[in-house]
Length: 296
Ligand SMILES: NC(=O)c1ccc[n+]([C@@H]2O[C@H](COP(=O)([O-])OP(=O)(O)OC[C@H]3O[C@@H](n4cnc5c(N)ncnc54)[C@H](OP(=O)(O)O)[C@@H]3O)[C@@H](O)[C@H]2O)c1
Image (cartoon, rainbow, N blue to C red; front, top):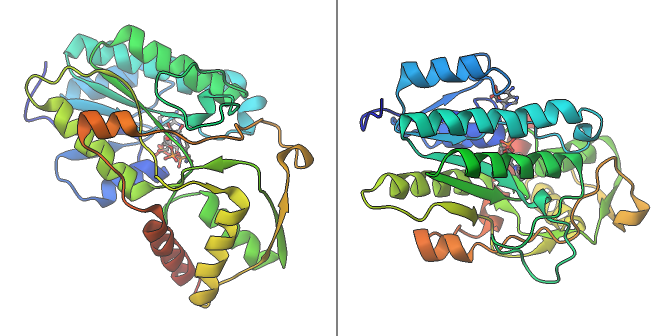
């Protein structure tokens, strides 16, 4: 069934990551969203893989809404655990690799330094538990897999922290933003390019470094400071801006708990794949420029 000429099949079309992969314009990638690629429909997934005969599958889809996952937990597990499990079985049967994207939310954030891929997961939320279950399902069902955890992803595409902050700044003078959650922001087009570079290396003869990786930006920041950076860029471009009112997470309750420390150490990806994502601040500037221009 494996065809060296087949495309890299990306599950997802309208999401931030799928759009960023598509925007790279590589003719050998094919981003397929619903209804043709539905993680809740194993028969559709099987049909798609049989028809397309991809040389690799990259799963950029899932139930990604962290707070709603607390009340829509069954749906989150169907998309984040069962769908990846089906994909993994299909990939194993076709003898093609599966790259599955996961999250920092598999960790509890209590570690004082950045998280390495082999640190013990301890999710705080239903979303995190569903994503962790997906990681395990992929590993159990498909030997030729990469689980790539990503974090604090932003871009000019789809919904993300930058778009939310600019929308709020258009509606009010001040916004409350947590100041005790820290992470490594990651510009989605850089992440997309990194994932395709991983895919290319995985497909090279002799690759055998299957397992879990982290791929994230390098410079840490807290959410409130990131909001300030967004507004500073926006102001400079004539876009909306608001005063950032820093709050502690414990004073800003949300349905799902998030790790206070979301920093993912990408050292293993650098060692094995030679990958280092560019400075995310350049990506922030581009995202803000595009989003501000869209509004004008
Ligand atoms: N954004 C972040 O900060 C962040 C952080 C950590 C991890 N991640 C992970 O990164 C990956 C990509 O996230 P994202 O930011 O691109 O999310 P997103 O913008 O919310 O997009 C969600 C994607 O999931 C797809 N999807 C939803 N329901 C589906 C279903 N039933 N079957 C198949 N696909 C379905 C959507 O497909 P359609 O194209 O059909 O609409 C869309 O492409 C996810 O695994 C997410 O958990 C993201």
